Length: 215
Image (cartoon, rainbow, N blue to C red):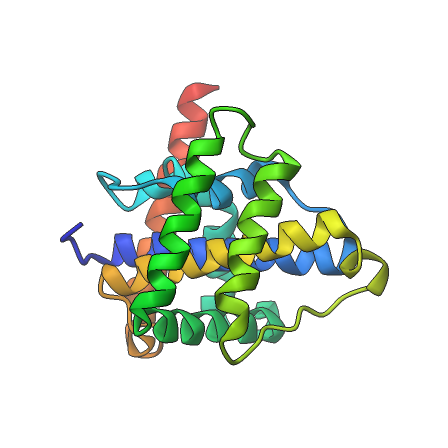
């Protein structure tokens, strides 16, 4: 992908926020939106996408993330500081991963194996999520800062939830990598906030128009 537009950057950033938001929801309530979870996990097995939105199966795949990002960019009382901390930590981990060819190769190899197993299991099968979680445990979680998810111990100690959380964190890393590939930088969020907000709103309007047309 060679395009470096605000649209691409908004989509990639929305992917990070969606993964992190779902992680936060699992930690605190033990439940989350499966329809938003699936595009996150699917992004891990999409290779050579034709466009940024293709990573998520279309704009619809990150609508939740776009809405969360929209609130975060507006600031004020609608901003979730904990969510922002998770996003910053993921961006930092992705930078470290990008400078570690050996670990990158290990992640890529693990995801290729996962992709092959999709012939036998559906994407959200516990076997697939467990395998993706293992990739995260054996690679990203060995880097610092280690992300400590806040929430209720009852939910955080549930093995299925642990697999989902680790899978989502790896999906967040995938989106962070995409963000960097399409020219995303920290200063873009700080100094290019208005352009980014306009791109997010345009994508949300596009999704609303598409939903209206389908119904």
